[in-house]
Image (cartoon, rainbow over all chains, first blue to last red; front, top):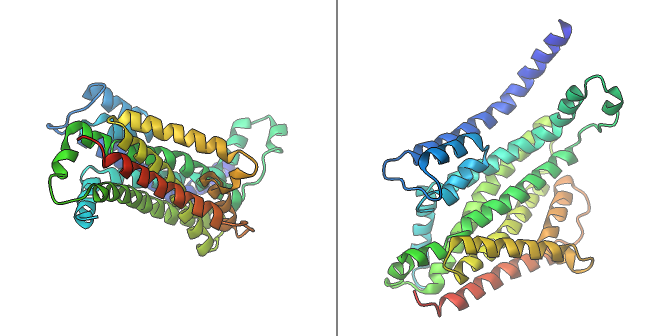
Length: 74
Length: 255
């Protein structure tokens, strides 16, 4: 029980530091997804569904690749 | 360089409209946060995974401030170089390919201004992203380890930015020489590999842009950094030479 309490205390300490990381990751992912599904958006190399999978599942590099390589106007 | 101010405003507006500035800043911010966190908690994670293999646990060193700075520099040098290449690879090549460069140059603007505005806009993107990363990296290092001298940390970020501008300028040269973004990126990567190899040479290496990271680390940690002026001068010279070569090639190109 003592160990669990210690772990919860540690989590409380770490959470405020990790939270911005989660927020930034989500912001990057949402920026990419919203941009991808704009009606006028044209993409290269693969279709929009594949780009959506790349953005969601390839951490950080996925959205980066979409913005710089995947967009028609990139 | 007639029309430089106008073209620079256009380029900076384009960087925000295409969200490139925000994307690069977010990626830099992510690595700035991840680096000190990894330095601090990776040993704990390894210890937890090691479980009953207690003999391994004793081998894991206690994390220090130097580990946080090392992680920061390692991550931002690698992903920063990738971002610099991605930012610069299509900047001129794509505009030539689509014919927009020819259209812009029908206005009363010089070709030198056209190129300079693009290079300065890329350097500005990298500057904003490095500044964001520097502030976050400094804060997280201070919270998780100890406060470092602000001046030294800022100097580290300035050197990091300069090394990224070198990669961007070399890729920018590649993008000007070719008509394809992929070829531009390829040339940028080749330059990156070549400067990497040259930096490993015993005498010349200490003047190459890659040695800026070593100096940057020492400055951040308040250690003797050796001469910073020489690699800084070489890096600035490479950027100026790349810009000059790009202009010499671009002014003769049929658009």
